[in-house]
Image (tube, rainbow, N blue to C red; front, side):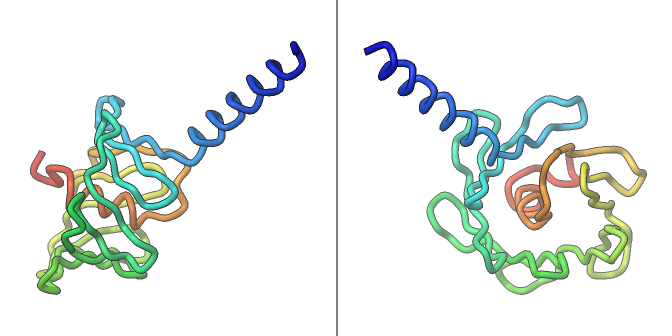
Length: 143
């Protein structure tokens, strides 16, 4: 009986660790969690309430499955009407449709044009979900 309970406890703990490992925590400039991203593309607020999602094609949807915009493979961000919100170059510098520098995205943070960190994160290989949260669900550069 003890072995069965021990095995069940190990299984539950293992599943909890695995679930936590596939979730990315996004922190604000003061290292306070502001959002979470799941491996399946769910975008959640600081309380794990689902705000929306991004699919494998880079299409961003809100919680009601309404199409909000696109994050293209080259990290160009467009709204639902195909208006360019930002273009990201090879170095991660983001510019608006007129070429003005908005900020930058790296493997660990999003910064504003002055280089101040707006969002911080770890463990993400795909920047599309970070940009989807930033441009469609957060205050963005206006915070």
